[in-house]
Image (tube, helix red, strand yellow):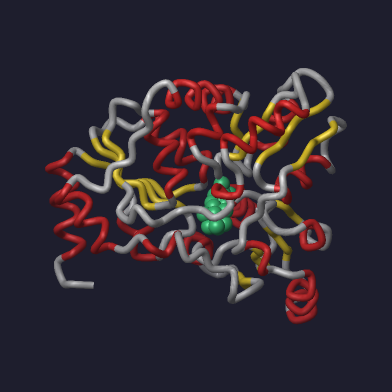
Length: 301
Ligand code: 13P
Ligand code: SF4
C-alpha cells in the first residue's frame, strides 16, 4: 500500500459525502477503513438508512446492486467491477421464468446472492440470516428457493413447507468438507463448531451451529465457549479475533477464500472515490420490481 492511502481515502470520503460499507469477508485493511462492516442483511439495512450521497461498497457486485436498488437517490460505487459472485451467475432470469412456469402460483424466495433481474422475478428476497423467517412468512405450503441449494436445503430441514431447490452453490464454501470438521474437532474437542449455511449438507450435519457471518460474530461474543471452529470464508477471522481477545478461532479450510471478495483493495477504494467510478446502477422497471422483493424481506423481523 502506498503511504498516505488511508489518509487520502478519509479526505476524499469527506469531500464526496461518502460512506464505506464493507462485508465481513473483505481484506482486513479494507474492513478497517469501513464505516460499517457487516453481513449481507446488515449491509442492506445500512444502505437503506445511511445519510450520505455516495456509498462505496466493499463487497461483491450483487451487494452493491442491492444497495443501488434500495437507495435509488445515492451513488453506489463498487471499487472493482469484476468482483462478482459465481453463485449469483448460476441462475438467469430466463431460467427462473421457465422454472416458475413449471410451478405456477408457488412463491419464489430469492437469496440476495443473485442479479437484479432475478430479484425482479421473485416474490421476496432473503439472506442467510433471515432465510427461515422469510420462508415461514409466506402463505401456502410450498416455496421455490433460488439459487443456493445448500441454504435452501438447510431451510427445508427446519420448515414444514416443501422447498423446491435450485442447484446453485458457493464455490468457496463447498471446499469445506466433513473430514475438515472431524480433524479439527479431534484437535480442539472443546470448541464450538459454527458453519455458514452455504456449506454442504454433510458439513452442516456435523456442526453445532449454522449461522450467517453476522450471527457468528454475535455468537462468539455471547457464548461462554472459549474456542470456536469456523466454517466460512477466511475474512471473518479478522473481526472474530479483534472483537474477542482471549478467545481462540480455528478456520476449517485454507481453501475457503473468496477470490472475488479479495479483489477490493485500498488503492481501488481510493480510485473509486477520486473518479466516482465504477458506478453500479439498475434501470427501471427492473429496479422497482427488485426493490419490492427486497422491501418485503426488510419488513420480515
Ligand atoms: P452473510 O450474509 O452471512 O454475510 O453471507 C454472505 C455471503 O455469502 C456473501 O457471499
Ligand atoms: Fe459468492 Fe461464495 Fe464469494 Fe459469497 S463467498 S460472494 S457466495 S462466491
